[in-house]
Image (cartoon, rainbow, N blue to C red; front, side, top):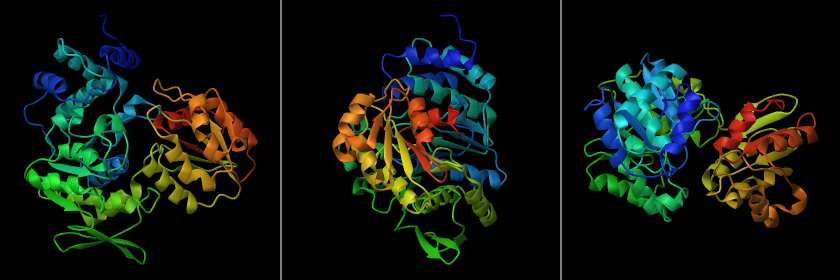
Amino acid sequence: MARPETLQDWLSWQVSLHSKGIDLGLERVAAVWRRLGPEVFPCPVITVAGTNGKGSCVAMIEAMALAAGYRCASYTSPHLVDYNERVKLSGEPVSDRRLCEAFARVEGAREEVSLTYFEFGTLAALDLFARERPDLAVLEVGLGGRLDAVNIIDADVSLVTTIGHDHTAWLGESLDEIALEKAGIFRPGRPAVIGQRDAPAALRGQAERMGARPIQLGREMEREPAESGWILAGSDGKRLALPIPALRGGFQLDNAAAAITALQCLRDRLPVSSAAVRMGLQRALLPGRFQVIPGTVTWILDVAHNAEAAQCLASNLQGFQCAGVVRAVLAVLSDKMPESIAEPLRPFVHAWYLAQSDDARAMSVEELSGRLGASLGVGAMQSFVDVESALDSAFAASQAGDCVLVVGSFTTVGQALRHSAGI
């Protein structure tokens, strides 16, 4: 193989390296890491799993750590526009050059092991972090937890945000089955933060069986309303008065409580002041999560791609003042349930612009419109061959004060961010 030179060359080659896009399991990726990385990871690690809320928790932990003056590394997926968004050091995406150098080191250690695109990228991120030796690394699980590539690293603190029905073909049909897969990131004797007060019993049960130390919202920690913000009550009896996070939505208070608790679990090694916590909550940004771009026509971008995320989006829309009507551009992946995404949004949407994204796993617009026709009504829908055409049409139909909502997947929102139709 002629070694790739540019970042795009490397990424295109990685897609073709393995026969499957998703191949859960740790044996292959762990074998390469043993040749590539240190036996002991050089900094504390917080690993974050969950159906929804992972990105929010990573963003808040990162922002709080940076506000406290620590060098924080973060690994997330997928990206919206540029691959570099996935790998950050001190809050900044890593350069193409450094990513390519890391990819070359992974290739040098890979030998004959076949790696998926995600596994290759995860190893490169971990290699970069191990060499950079930051004060803290925050790792977001890609899918599930137990068999996800990031789980080759033993987390000092594990955080599971919420459990919902998503990726059922890989994780199981029942919430308890999914919870057990997420619980795979827990480690004996180490904190297992649970950011959902009504999480499936199997999640906490597994933490207790393996000897982890569960800290669950509604039990060991609680959040309470306050006149000008909210209060986090910890298991140590301390109460911390906090501002409303910059990330929109009442549900973000649950994510904030979990993120703060996870960071506090490392206080002996990385103490963070109350002022840094407050500053971090108000600084945390996360593109594509109820991202509002104001203008004559307001754009609202949200990657919601399952029922629970769509319900959170609907809650945000209910509290958002749109002077005119809302038009929704929707494109989803083939393994999703578009009915469960559209239904919570239906009361807020005046017209639907259905499309097929440029993702290889995208659901065809014919299937999308066929599945949504009965619930949305044929007169409320238009179909387009691609997301760009749908964006153009929704924008052209809008008047001053109207809103265009872009929803359904990371790919859909990423295409909107790259598109020039008023964004």
